[in-house]
Image (cartoon, rainbow, N blue to C red):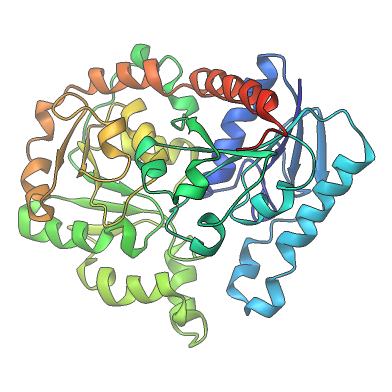
Length: 377
C-alpha cells in the first residue's frame, strides 16, 4: 500500500518544539513504514522525517504567517493543497490519502476521486457550516477520541469510521523504564490558552500550596524573552493567547510558587514531566486528543484533571490519575497524587499508547476506507 500523508504547510515534521499534529505525523509515519506501507509525506521542505517520497510547496513552515491579516495568508493552505492534488494527478500509484489539514482537507479531497481519510485533531464545534453539511463518497473521517466524535454534527458523523487514540514513542517499553525520582513540582504542559486553563492552575498553586511549572508557548512566542519583547509591540500584544497570558496568567507567575519556562522539548521536556509529582489538566474545553496526557502516563506521572473531553477515555480514575468535575477540588487532588502508582501509569501507556498500537489501528481504517471508496455514505 502507498499512502500520501498530508501534514500541511505550517510546521516541519517533526517540529522543533510545539506542534501537536506534526508530532502525531512524526510518530505515525515511521511505524507505518516499519509495517510495510510506502509513505509519500506532504509537508514543508525543511522537514527531516524520512519517507519514501516528499511533496512540498513551501521551503519552510508558514506558522509565523498566521499572525498576518487574513487576506495575506488565505492562499497558503490552498497553495499547499494544490501541490498535493498535482502529485495525485501526475501518478496513479497512491492508494489512499491520509489528511491532517483542518477543514481544507475535506474540501480538497471530497471530489478528488481518490480514497481519503481525514483525522480530526480539533474541536468539532468549529466550522459548523462545513461540518454540518459535509457530503462526499470518497472521504471518511476518524476522531482522536470517542468523546470528540460524539460532539460532531450528524453530517460529519455519517462519514466516521471510528476513533484512534494518539500515541507517543515514549510509551515504547515504558513499563521497563527505571522510575524517575519525583522532586515535588506539578507541571502543566501545552499551549497557554483559555481552554487549557493555566490561569486556574496558577491560582490553585497559590491557594492550595503546590509548586507549579507552566511549559508551552504563548501564541507564537516560545521563550520568555520573546514574549516580553512582543508585549511591548501593540500589534503583537493583541494576539488572543498573549492577552490571556497578560491578563489572566501572568499576575500569578511569581518565579517561585509559579514559573513559566516557555516551550521545552526533547530530554528537557521528558525530565520536567517525569520528575513531577503530577501533570495537571485544568481543562475548560472538551479536549479532543490529549497528547500531553499520554506522554505524562508514559513518563510515569499521574494525571490530575477535569473529567471532560478525552480524559475519561485516557485516564483510569484512581489507577493512573485522579479526575473531578469540580475545578476547586483540583488542588486537593494534587496533594493526593501520591496515591497513584507511577508504575501503573507506565504500564498502561505501554499497553495502549505505543506507536505500533496507533499504526495498526490506522491500517485497519485504511482498509475500510479503501473498501468503501466511491460508495454513498
